[in-house]
Image 1: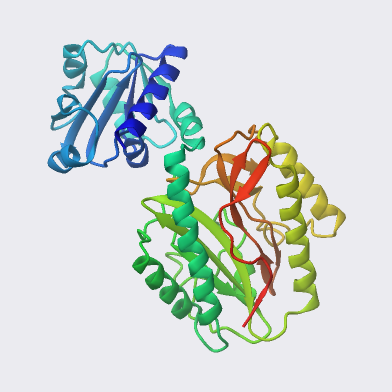
Image 2 (image 1 turned 135 degrees about the vertical axis):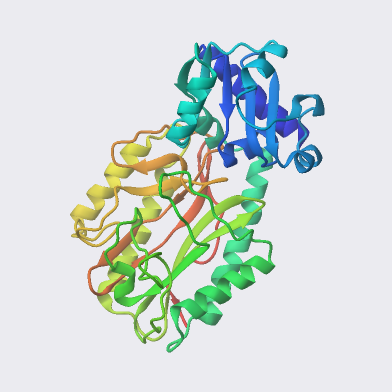
Amino acid sequence: MKKEIESRIKKLSQALSRNGIDVALIMQNTDVFYFSGTMPSGVLAISNTGKVVFAIRKGYERAKEETPIDKESLLQTQGISKLPEILSERDIKYLTIGIETDVLPLDMYFRLKKTFKDATFVDVSGIIRSQRAIKSKFEIEKLRQSARILDCTMEDAKELVRVGKKEIEISAELEFRARKRGHLGRCRMRGFNGEMLMGHVHSGFRSAYPNGLLKPTTGYGLSPNFPDGASNYKIEENTPVIVDFLGNYDGYLTDETRVFVSGKLDKEFEKAYDFCCEVMNYLEENAREGASTLEIYEHCIEMAKNRGYEDNFMGAKGNQVPFIGHGVGLEVDEYPFIAKGLDFELKEGMVFAFEPKVAFKGKGAVGIENTYLVKKDGVESLTKYPREIVYV
């Protein structure tokens, strides 16, 4: 772990130097963990010369045990007011300071501006997210373990999905079993107002129910306070059941969706599911290092139009989302995105989830999702549960 953290810090330090940034002040939990291996409350300062200061407000003793960062770089502090003095003592310049503007609260920004009166603040969230998008061998192994947990969850669903059982009963049992296998239970998102359950179990019209969340299918949920996921509705015969879950191993997330049916599925849904598999096949044939995510997205949208699913692809009409894939790692919305207007060049080591889905308002939805590792000559599916509709 020590070499892993040292490598991450070195890469960021070099990126800061290339961009004329003296120091990055990292405060978001996931980024702090990525660069330190621990998650106290405080500020992790990384300079463009490779120097590190970890000013910890709460959790100092545990951080000392967990982080491989040199203990001389760790110190206890009661806030940010002393940071300029602390950095100066370690000969770290702070004329230009990088901060995570995509997640940093505005009141914290104002406090930093007041503390570092003569400094210029710039955004380093893109630099950090681009670095995190390329997974190391260490991280890829974590993701493989996460995918194994997830495949087991799908096998559990094959046993649990039955007519007459409530969606929430199935979802809760899947969560329970996943936790026993090592799932951490939390699934982090970076985006504003982003909230994520361990997974979804929803069926029938609930799968295509309108909502304000940036997800193609969400379910009805248990309350308007959390309009997402499983509900108290019961599974019905001949109705598609979507099981969309996240694996989590040591914080690393993978994403997988399969469709389960008790009885016989309507031809309309079967045809739509076949189309989703065709889109998945296109992705697997064309995604590789150097490929454009925007070109992949636009081709998939064109496929949907040509097959008559323009108003159903990635959500029911009026509730569609402008993406088909998203990066995963320590968060479920990492780079790269396979989305409208966003063009990422796929690079070896990137990991993303791809989720073609078709929804019919008032009826239901079908779809498939796998998590992929980008390689030079293609992609490898880390999630390996059989792709066929599962009849139970």
